[in-house]
Amino acid sequence: MVVERQRPLGKFVNVDVSTLPGIERAKTLGLGSNQLAQVMASSHFQEISSLYQNTPLKGRWFSLMRHPVDRAISLFYFLKGLQAWGPEYTNLSLEDYVQSSFVESNWMIRYLIGKKSGDVGLEELEMAKEILRTKVLIGLLEDVDTSLNRFLQYFGWKIAGEDERQCVSRLVQEKKVGQNIHEVVSEQSDVWQALMRINNWDLKLYDYARLLFQEQQSLVNPI
Figure 1: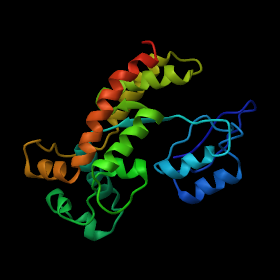
Figure 2: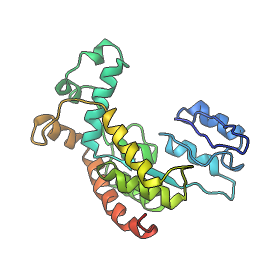
Figure 3: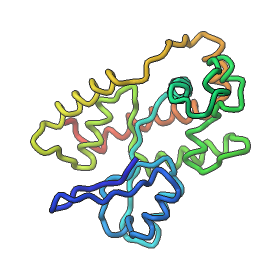
């Protein structure tokens, strides 16, 4: 995940804000105040927000959110395919993964409020809901066409030489072709039900995000 913005001479500023060292480098460059970047992509919500401290400029988060159980299953197969965590992970079945120390719990809430360990409950849910309500333009993977078009219109992004709607349609189709393919897991299965219990607070947050998605329609006009 990189930060980049095309400049008049065709040059790019290229800073990796997907890592904490990269965010620290972005601070030294004054990336939050000098308008070198229009878009930043990072999973470090709290840390990257600090780029806008002590500056009149304000950032606006936008996020394409996914059902927590779908996300957990897809992440398992993605990392398994990468062989990212060694043979002890690569040889796990999905059923074993759900019972292992590798499985994530309530990742969305932890990501938003910066709580990497400890229990998650009602207090943390309310904190995460307030962050979504006040700081995030919501997109949903289950309605990706509407979400991407909303991002384009809200931020006023233009795609040189292309119709934005056609570009979004092509992007969605290309993503479907290249997506991580894995076995479909039934919502009635023990694995699905276990992941629902593990991510019970994230499920409540996702339901809230769906409500926000509908409410935020008033922020833009249909393209």
